[in-house]
Amino acid sequence: MNATAAATTPATTRRGSNLPRVGDYNQVVVLEAIRRNVEGLSRVEIAGLTGLSPQTVSNICRRLLEIGLVEEAGKRVVGPGKPRTLLRLAPRGRFAVGVHLDPALMTFVVLDLVGRPVARSVKPLRPGLGPEQVLGEVAQEVAALVAASGVDLSRIVGLGVAAPGPVDATTGTLMRPPNLPGWDRVAIRDMLAEATGLSVLLDKDVVAAVVAELWSGAIGGPGSAVFFYIGTGVGAGLVLHGEVHRGTSGNAGEMGHLITGPDGPPCSCGQRGCVGEVCSPRTVVETARRRGIDALDAALDATAAGEDADHRDVVGDALGRLCALAAEGNPVALELLEDMATRFAKSAVDVVNLLDINQVVFGGPLWEHLAPVFLRVVPEIVRAQAVASTIHPITVRGTSVGADVAAVGAACLVLDQAFSPRSATLLVTQ
Image 1 (tube, rainbow, N blue to C red):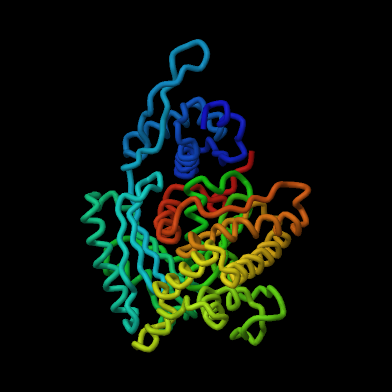
Image 2 (cartoon, rainbow, N blue to C red):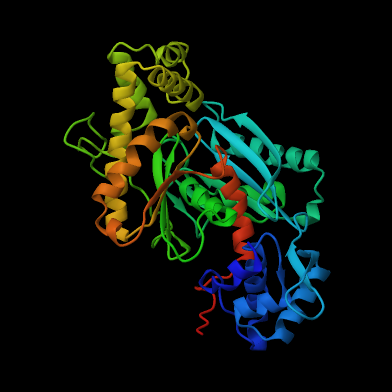
């Protein structure tokens, strides 16, 4: 972002206070302003964006340079006088580790301070292992990945874990997620903190995904967005007025029981047409096979061999084959995927109208397969049925982060907690 653009968008940057008692808050306000402007900001521009005095900004910038969180990024000539020194985040100033516990796979990443992965690994979550065994493997892999990355352990801010909900974020406990049988009241935060020696955060995978979008800048300013996550299950993450909305217990976004129509297989809640059941990848590929497409043969073979038919490798591969058939013009495959997209569009419209959302984002490990059909079907339905579409534009897009959005988001949770200002922490008015 250039200096002119930065100066004309002050609403995207929080305001600080010149009172000494809020020095730590001011530091992260300045850091956030610098992070949002990847080309760098001068101290004068930082003062203008944050409302802090030039002396306060100078002191904070000196401290950030000393501790290695920012670095000088050249000079910029602005009118008469000497050029202004630009500051930007120092990518290797700090790092965070992220882990995504999917019912099939565990994805691990190490992120630098600007949110770029510097190391990545994937391991299967083997069926039949208990939580203690799985978390033991997680701790071992985290240690191995950090060692392989070459990152000094003292620069690791912490470890973020993204898992299917529901979670008790206050205690760091996983609370009987439907797609992880046997994981009832598992104290993930405390167990991994003890095993790794790192500070640990636990949150829902959909929350982690939307935090990744925020940290990357893809969801910017004071806008609102919904992130639909499509993996083994489906869920939604919410951003309202530029901040993640977690709800009373941290479990907002459980949208699996939104009704998309009167038909479909019966859901565990007793209704039909629930988006989480009728649009789950497992249901879609099973329906495809019943209609004469052999996309689920591998899953049936795995089941016969005693494996879990919900294993994402199996169902994901089957869904990928179904999407390939649709791209080749198979009418049944195309009909099934268009129906799935239409039902998701119905759910998106419900959320957009309820919360006055201006951005709809799709992502997750299976999104790449679904993107061509979804991006053709969903935007038209959303824009046609959203009540406020004549007042403000509504963007429908895929994630900017990629298939690892939940793991990346888990690491971003750590960076976000450490280096982003919180309105709930300190209310500062202009």
